[in-house]
Amino acid sequence: MTLLPWPLPSPPHWHVDWQALQQFDWIAAMKHCPQDPVHHAEGDVWTHVRLVCESLASLAVWRSLPEPQRELLFVAALLHDVAKPVCSRHEDGRITSRGHSQRGAVMARRILWEHDVDPLLREHICSLVRYHQLPFYLIERADALRSLLRISQSTPCGLLAILAKADALGRTCRDREGLLTRIALFEEMAREQSCLSGPWPFPSPLSRFEYFRRDDRDPRYKAHDSSRCEVILMCGLPGSGKDTWLREHVAGLPLISLDEMREEVGVDPGEAPGELLQTARERARVLLRTASSFAWNATNLTRDLRAGLVDLFTSYHARVHIVHIEAPRHALLSRNDARERPLPPRVIERMLGRWDVPDATEAPIVEWWENDRAFVRRSPPASSEVQP
Image (cartoon, rainbow, N blue to C red; front, side):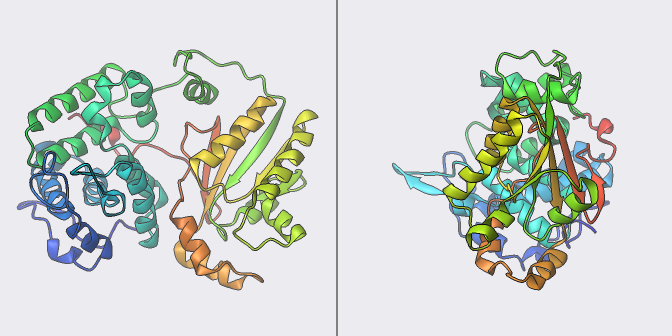
């Protein structure tokens, strides 16, 4: 598996091969998306993205990185504003695109998944897209430290700073120097917190989880494990292999399966009415009251949905173990076609439009699996060499 099928700018000329990019419809959408001239006097979104990619390719710090990191950043630069066409609105004579970073991470995930990009590389790119604006204003936020430590759990802050620098240089605006100054402050803060090139080192995975759940926690606090049982929270697209994983790894563990419950009440695949979810939660409470470990099996594709379940389980002193399962596109669609009741394409499309892979902050234990291979989020190759 590789990154996207176009060449990376390389020495001695470092040219960007724009001709190789014309085939993608998400690029066509950016060409027709205007931007607010106050922040982007250079023109439409695609004009900006081209300038960002060319600015990135001209940076000495980017050229000095190992090729895997150069590729991560270049693809992130291409995709960082991919959601602006669906998020842009005209409001009071201005053009806004609120939410495009978070939506862009989801769109980037689908694009990269459809190109069979390695999941670890894909998720580093998606994190860069998700957080690409934060270096512009993080230093001014009341929760600056918490936000910085959260970012560091997903992607090296040094790489994010390089992307933000290219983003600032690839635009025409009056406050470009101010943006560059704030990026420099972001870098300095990350350096002071020892998370410029890797994740901030929490005392334990449980400490990390508790820190992001509670506003009053010190990140250096070593949390005490008071769990009475464990809940395995499965997540992943239909056909990714969740049932297989459960059979092979925790056979015999009590199971709450939304698919099985749908069969019981005759609900169409892909649908989860409120009554069904409420019944599933009540079954979970029965097990939690007796401190019984179990598995909760459903797609659980969004961060908000997982957070609600994690809150329920931890309120009964259960330790949550998230297991994310995925499969390459061709395998997943083939498995769906082979189902007795395959999901309609429109349902899969809807799910892909909200697919948000869990990160290390969501539970004490977060595992990713693909094709019977376990892998965990880690820093990109040679991240320790990042010194913007």
